[in-house]
Length: 404
Image (cartoon, rainbow, N blue to C red; front, side, top):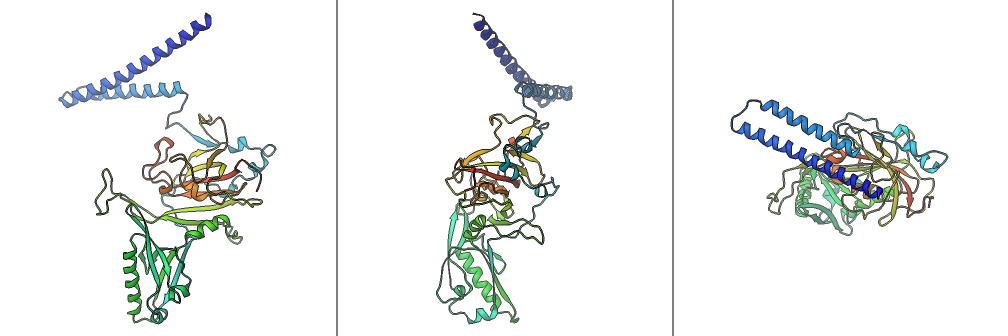
């Protein structure tokens, strides 16, 4: 009987609190409408005082809601990395030793732009005027294209035998990046063919015999191969092994119909080159089995905004010293590589974590197009068009935490 009475008291208290909350919101809203009506009708007397009063009520209401829920207001929230508090050499030696070296840690730079890295999967050929004069039947490339909505990628469909292209070593399925300085990533196959013709004619008509033609391609397989076999560390400069690829070129990204008109609700937008960069911070001690699509991966990570250095997420972070609700104090997360639900994690993870080994630690620089895009993520305080940095350690692969 006593337990039943306590339960009824608790329910009554909850009902009263909810009623008070609804009444407070309704009162603040009514007051705001009344103020707007008085201003619209020309009654400006006391408008500023009414505005201040309504604002104070809303601020008080917000503080009470956050205090009642145990959360911090967005302006007060401070997110910190607590990895060291969880990982100790005695208990989790492998995880602890795979921490990011302090020399590689970001120091919150106040930078406003991202330096474009050298793209490791791009190949440039320089063709001399003499080679163009001696070629038979053109360069020997058949162009094709792949399209997504209104965007195109021009690819090499085939290479003619005994042609100049075959002698140079150009391969099918390569993506055309530029022809004589003209951007080949913002046109279709017909447009690229025109660029090739114009560039060849320009070189052949030049009175200078030293004039050359530069053509740049992207090898899609090269980036994937480099993720499984990083280049050696440059001991002279101390630079860590890094690979990168451009996933989208600079230019207009507005959603349009085929005739060029805007789609319903679309706005005119532009972007810079969208480049994914992957740096190997800590190599694996051994590796015979690498992460690939459909593998269950367990990772620990720390996410920061490159432009500000602010921590916005992590597997072992705390907000104002408190754990993130719903995580149960876990310091790692699981997901299926290449099959994660839309919006759960940034798509850049599927690109940058491919080929990873247990114990390996990588730094991923994710462009907006593979992050949170032009809208950002206000809930995580990620601004629009933010470039993201993730330091990621592969803790286990398909449930096995030992090197494979």
